[in-house]
Image (tube, rainbow, N blue to C red; front, side, top):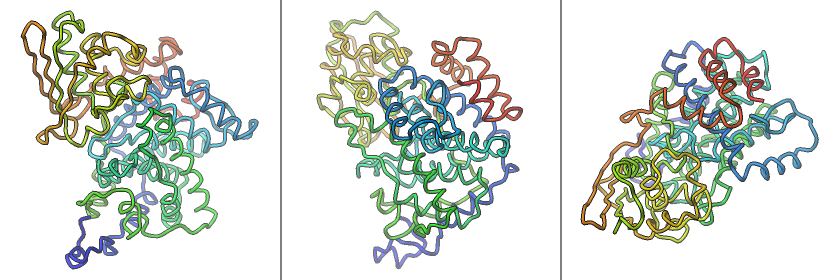
Length: 474
């Protein structure tokens, strides 16, 4: 971990009391004001909110996990005793922690929610779920600008923590989306409740004992992954309540010798100065990107390249002799390992994390099949192409970059390389495509007119309330 004290660094002491990171982040939350909201921030919040609602509704109506998760939470909570709502036909009368849990799980179920590349995490699913539920709970006491501000703060905390955790955290077995996500959720809730700095610091300290999310879900494509951000939001509500009641949490939870950053990531160059530099003036979360494809972000350049190649000719598995893929070494574990559940996935999550499946599907059926791609898990043409695919790594490739080669049986070779995934700042996902994605997810259950009303309400968000938005979604 980068420190400001050379002697401490030389002695292996990675705790840096001279950089009070936890206090700085707590101060950032406690002193946040709507006056900080620029037009760029407001526009971005509306964009990610449209996307969040789209993927949440899509998750509710298309994920096999929705019904059992809902049934479990309803049984655990007991009969209607709360005032919060799960999005779009979910259980009514929920306590906030359970409503937040469900909404976050729904929004993450399709792996279609926004991402932050430098932090290798989904920052919005916890920030938005916590902010929406807390705003609904407060009702008229929560001005819409406070909600917009809370979303910004939640995202920013998640992205900054994720950036310091790095991809190395995954190799330790942790899912950054939820381990960092609980802190962004705490921040969003605390902004809306106008908590003082000492309470925010205690809530962070308590959340350090609840941060979790095991990558072992990759072993069998389990639904743990979908629940991770839900657990984070649930526990954020609990930690804030405990702190408000005077429960003492750990100090220096981020920077301490046994704190969050040390425990959850072996990354060698964590930079505590960078973590808190420019808080309130430099918003790194604005680099968050929306996902055009419902699959792990690490497969997206390959989906686009394969779709482009497939669009030039009619493709069948018998036409292709071999497919070669090169990806960054960091990405092999998640999407390219030569294991049976990656080469021939049999469930949605395994397919979402299989570059073999994603390339084969895009070559055969195009890159814009959306969630319908997962209706083809037993497709013999896809399985045949997966068997012809070899995945290796190239250290010259970084982040989401990829190289793809298709060797055809007639001797022709197509080769492509792409640096930036669609949706990143360098390869933008335009607003018309945001709306197109949203409508594709909502129209089947909401109809065109109602779906368009949701977009219109969010575009004029300052004239409405979160409660009104929830009402439209029911």
